[in-house]
Image (tube, rainbow, N blue to C red; front, side, top):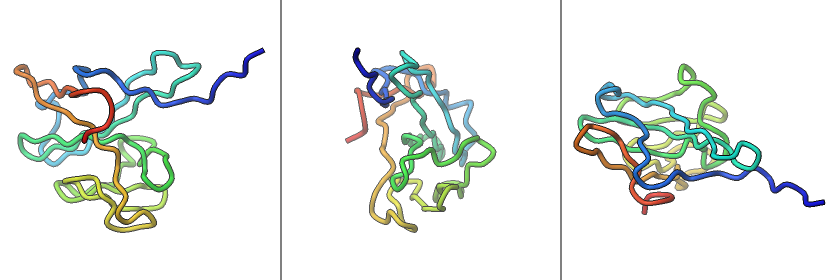
Length: 133
């Protein structure tokens, strides 16, 4: 009998809508989650949207040090608008602009970036499959 593989991360396809610009306040950091296509073999895709003006940065919601989400719930997410976002497990602090850890046990490592763009309707959409270059 085959042993099921451990749960793996599923990256949504290009064009997947992660949110809407008009639903994010300027300076907000918002957690999102897309269900896995198969809950038996994949984990949900957890992400963060960070808005500064008309610019949205997107990162996987996965600490570079522990690999756990930065927060379990939106109300527990620690951030300084336009400046940084922190892991509430061990308080590593990541720059808002590029996701690079600037304080904590993972200095120099980065949150996995997600390439996104705004479409004509104001949707925040994934560009390409996988992490941002």
